[in-house]
Image (cartoon, rainbow over all chains, first blue to last red; front, side):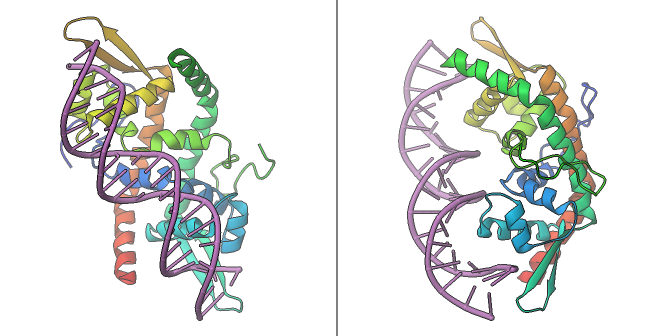
Length: 129
Length: 129
DNA sequence: CTGCATCCAACACGATACTG
DNA sequence: CAGTATCGTGTTGGATGCAG
């Protein structure tokens, strides 16, 4: 926790970004599937197979890994019902639900700027081609 | 835009997350340095060397790559002053500044939950060790 | 000072096969 | 159904050297 700066002059208050734990969140939000899984868990608890069907394209392996990481971070709870065949239910925890708000912002910003960004990329690519 | 769901019941409105462009933002926010660079650019324009000093640990290569990507997306502008030695100034564009708000949310959430998450990880690691 | 090119290690992810 | 184990691959990022 180096002292450094604590705010910026752009209207958006930004605290220390060096090693204050932002990386932790980035590691979750940055990977390929976490956001999608959380979105599918937002409406309510889901079973493993259910999730795999909802999150298009995810492999069994990656679904397992993603859920384990979320579980480890306390964002998702895992409940096993000792039936036959086994049945496991995943649900967002309190902390996990608070993340859906963040993800909403993320998606909103995406939607708001995707056109401008796409256009900028095209122009840049044309200019440098 | 597959039909699917359009909102969740958790209070946080989440639109389609499958392939509606969230990935684009994730690709920016997910990498190792973008967030840090944007934070350092938030207070005002910076030169290349300046940025490299401010963003602790970044290599010359990654700073260049990060800035190029941001430039391509129209989030950062690059101004060359034909002096000797050359001098290049980077600054956030309008769109880029709008992203600082998003990043603020990110950092806020990180700070708010880093303790709980860290604790959860320790417990999980101890439980599974 | 600014920036590109190259080599190289680490890791994320996908495909597949196998278990309780 | 709900996982685990293994292998192969692409990408990311760090180190280094060179150039305008």
